[in-house]
Image (tube, rainbow, N blue to C red; front, side, top):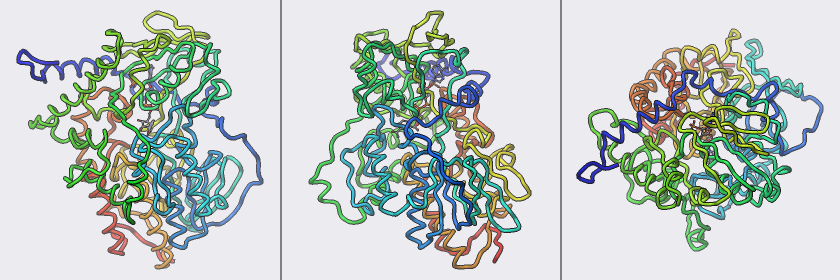
Amino acid sequence: MTDDKGSLDGAALKARYLAERAKRLRAEGMDQYIATSGALARYREDPHTPQTTRAAVSEDIEVAVIGGGWGGLQAAVELVKAGIDDFRIIDKAGDVGGVWYWNRYPGASCDIESYIYMPMLEDMDYIPTEKYTRGPEMFFYARSVAEKFDLYRRALLQTEVSELRWDEASGRWLISTRQGDRLRARFVLVSTGQLQSVRLPGIPGVESYKGRSFHTSRWDYDYTGGNATGGLDKLSDKRVGIIGTGATAVQTIPHLGASAGHLYVFQRTPAAVPARNNGPTDPVWAESLRPGWQMERMVNFNRLISGIPQKVDLVNDGWTEVLTGVGIEIAGYNDGDDSRQRADFAYMEGIRARVDDIVMDGTTAEALKPWFNAMCKRPCFHDAYLDTFNRPNVSLVDTDGRGVERISETAVWVNGEAYEVDCLIYASGFEFQTPDLVSRNGFEIFGRGGQSLTEKWAPGMRTLFGHLNRGFPNLFNQTASQSGLTANVTHGLGESARHFAFMVGYCRDNRIRSFEPSAAAEDAWSERVHALSGLRARFDAECTPGYFNNDGQPQAGGGLASFYPGGAEEFIALIKDWCAAGTFEGLDIQHA
Ligand code: NDP
């Protein structure tokens, strides 16, 4: 969009962004989604591992790690390294790997550079085969970590926690599982992931559909044929529909387009899809790496995206381009200095021009153009997504922001028209800011005096460092909320894993029975974090709805989407200093 002089027309762009946002705002906000319970529970059942039974476990342990994804695995490795052997990893999945266990959809791939995303590469003496590793390699690697550090013998898999309850008398957490286990742990790490609870759009008729349907994180290869690298041969005579065009859909749609008899892509909001430029690892480069290279690369990435200039951009990809050019920080957009906004307009114009360059049909190209600021939604880098819409067997069904109207026994309805499909795939994402912990995690946490964490956070999230909660002794919540957010999530998880292992070791060495934040420390931290929420609210006010902004209804204080205002690097340094001081400052401590 340009003005008479050929320069970007900021006013027109802003007006278009606001108009597109208005089309998508819904009074029901997040309540437009429905949890996969009751008749819809099959959408979250595990298709990957047959359910087995085992005798219930009853035991006292030092540490329980809930979740065997990259957070739990790194914490377990740190515990092993700290000489803490008496722990369990509990996960409802049939194996470790977390998101990489569940998300086996065709095309699943790491969208952060694998040399910084795959943790512990030097410990493992492993070099990923590509700059952006695919799902199977990631899952294999997670399992290799568990094998190397002997974590499987400590794992309780296919085991779903049903409740955590603090027992004051014994100074332990009582952990109940749906498999009948009763564990008593002195310390608990909750590492359940922030995007793991499957959600479906509450489209009228969603439960009436009689064809085959599943969520992308529970892919049904028996039905589609093929595997995570594609080749979905059983779809060749099928009409397939997919609802959603977020990061998952962008990765899987090229494979569906290549295999399906006909593919209908039901779109509410177009994704921003810059180029990916993946490629195999250069063996000469790999050979040149020296000890310490991975952390150096991770820190370089983190600093760059936190706005700290670096002599060199080691990763040098679409993420560093968008986050250094436009910025993960949201300051500046509505504060008089509009240089950030202008950079963002220019960046998004490039994304829209790319659509015109690739998509041949003009109407389809127009419908695929995103009209929002870059970081309103996660950018979805891909080299084959837009091309897929040039296939004769692929139709984009654009809903102009309204979403799918209804679903019948055989069809998806949009704008009064029925699209008959044999198979319907939900790429509708995961719960994120749902206040109800049971819905998000599958279990409630009851702290001192029987108070639940859901109750505690009802007026707004309050923590120390995002990880610690007053009233919930010896519990460490491994989350990005209220802590340092980085696009390279596994890096953040690695730092919090070290923080957790340090705390467990410190308690052991100093005969500490329990710790929890003081009221003053928790208040001070929460105020500090909330300071950003005013800026965030102003940024969100112009953003298209999505899970970043609680579907257009930001929560008080930023809710789960509030982060340490100084960025991830400053947060990591702050925690390192806190550990190095060795005083457990801000905590109330009871000695054994
Ligand atoms: P998202 O929540 O990002 O996307 C859900 C999609 O469903 C959106 O396009 C949404 O539209 C659409 N939708 C919801 N309701 C309706 C409706 N009623 N009618 C039509 N469409 C509807 O989920 P994803 O699974 O794509 O991604 C979740 C996150 O997982 C990512 O943001 C990322 O953090 C992570 N991820 C990471 C990857 C990686 O490689 N690291 C790969 C894949 C995912 P609308 O936009 O309008 O709300």
